Image (cartoon, rainbow, N blue to C red; front, top):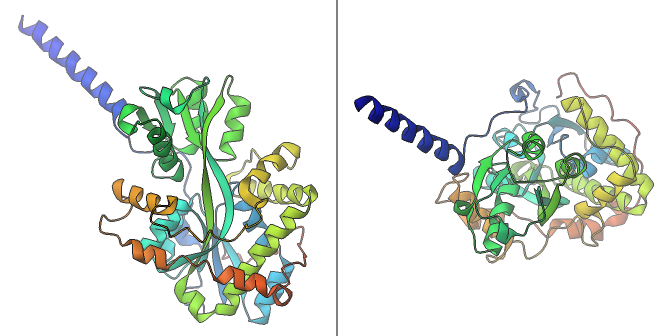
Amino acid sequence: MKLFIGILLLTVVGMVSWFAIYESPQPVKDAMSKPDYDRYHYDRGNEDRIVDFGMQPNDLSPASISESLFRDRILQKQLLTEGWKLREHRYNNGNDMISYLDGRLDAALFGNQPSVTAMVQRNVGIFAVCAIGHNTIIANRILTPANFKGLRIGYPFRTNAHFALERALITANLSMDDVISIPMQPGELESALRNHTVDAVICWEPIIASILENVPNSVPTFSSDGYTYVAIDLDFAKNHPTVQKAILAAVVRASRWLKQNDRHLIDALGWIREGNIAFTGKSAIEPDAKWVAILKTQGIQSPSFPMIRFDITDEQGVFHQQFQFLKKIGSIPSNADWNVVRDRINTKLLPGIIGESEFWQIDTFDYAPDKPVQSKEGS
């Protein structure tokens, strides 16, 4: 009898442990190897007058602009006039960059949530939109958010996709407690859906396109916008306003160049592919018609792009909702001040630069087919 009771207790404990694994968020495995960012050469203090720029070459959304910046001969000339050069540093994601905004990085490209976190933790502001992407839920069958209750959903924890998943559930009067949420690395989502480890996943491009192409019976069920911003160290901006304006003018110039025709988009996709391969050794992106159509969904066709929406600081808006969301999940302190974030969002500088379009040559295009060779001390 004692043996039977012991076996029964072990069985119950095992079942409780199994349910705990699937009912509560698990630590995200570090599936993508992380470079040794500390070994990058940073011009702290700008003694060498180099703009250290952080970017994410493994992502489609910001790459359409950032890859253009490093080939922009006009930007290079404008910076040289001030005695400056531009140097890139590559990171897996925006969160990896935040700790380097301590004077090592002068500018960076961030998605929504790393932007908020960076503005809370570091002396940085956002000045332009780099891309308008989408976070899409893909399921193994046709569903609506109302059908998500009880399903296993894979998602990248503490990302804009995580926030988008919560918003999707809210539309159906559900919460994360109503689904079996399984945190995963973005690169794990496709195999999880293919192997039926999960019923649905949520992520961004180019992962979404790869899943829809490679996982049988996969269908998109919900989508919401996600923004990528150009962030600049505020001390750097204050001390070197002409350099800051030259960089932002190059963002405007790249957006106008990309809007002109599909040939430019194909060139940009080729550059994105090169950047992917140089950083990770592979790329799902191809410079073809399919990827041109995907790149066009990244906001470049919007007449206001790359300007930040003037209502971004509205306390009823999505940006403020993300600020509250990051408090809830512990990414930023519970006493973080919204006013600090709000005051670091600059919606006025870019329109002023566009008003001086002739001086900044934002309607003149001169892009090199290759990036200039950078110092061996760069990333």
